Amino acid sequence: NFEKYYLLDTNILLEDARNIFKLSDGAKNLIILSETVLDELDSKKSGYDEINFQAREFARILENSEVLSSNKHEDFKIIRLKLINQDETILDIISKDEYTINSKNISLNILNDRKILEIASFANNHYKKQVEFLSLDIMARTRAISLDIKTDALVGKDKDVFDFEFTKEITINFED
Image (cartoon, rainbow, N blue to C red):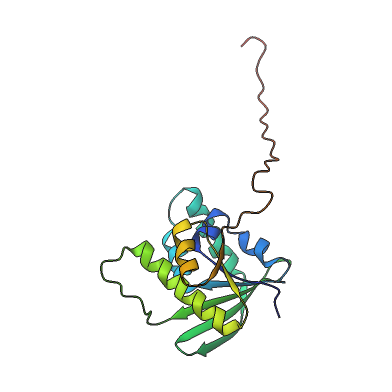
């Protein structure tokens, strides 16, 4: 009973972990994550860069969640969580023990993209609604298109609007 179904790539959450709440739009939309996204976020928690902060922030978001259900469909397992925020965002995490991808001679990032897209294909059939794959990675979005998965880059009409004001107050002694 959701308006939209979004499957997120890791980079959407590394750009801003709170994107999950924005995309949920007051719990109107279902957010779907592949276990591969969780693995990639987990591997980025250490460090002092912005992506490391965002990975830790997402871990804090997950920490404040409640498991609503855990179901198995074919070879896939779906865990439904309610994220405790003002809108009680609903999140489905989908995992699979064995992926159909041949992992020989494929770099890890390409392998992970293909695992995420395998989850997206399953989600399209499982929810009987069109699932939209959101990614900032043009290569992953191109692969999604080749698999007939609707995709977008998470940029809207306001992407070039910058309404920020940065100020810093400095006290300088007259003698200086």
